[in-house]
Image 1 (cartoon, rainbow, N blue to C red):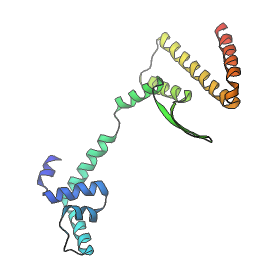
Image 2 (image 1 turned 90 degrees about the vertical axis):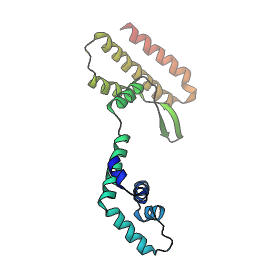
Image 3 (image 1 turned 60 degrees about the vertical axis):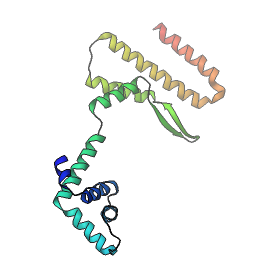
Length: 175
């Protein structure tokens, strides 16, 4: 890209950069060139001509490719995100009939899905890891069940919910 960019005039580079920002050739031309004594038709015509020049077109294509590559997540970034989701460090917006709530922890179901996606990339046969995943899955299900019951009972049912969950946990510990 630097070779192409060096061959452009200052005005051509300004035109191309403005065109990339706005997608409007006429507006880019007005910002890059002196158009004081030009009619709108002439400006549009010159903008189109400039846009069709091979060197300008090549520069624009190369810059667009650079920009799109820099916006695509790397595999490492995806894995780090999935790890944060599994660890419960990511939040999301949740919309209900009562409004939109920001910074809500990612749901248990989504955490389990993220864990499965990570395990697809890093399969393990370690029994301890399998037990940790089972515990994470169970904890997630308990959290989800608690949230569902709390939603049904409302704020008055917190004590009932705690009592019910304690019984469930004691029963599961016996097994």
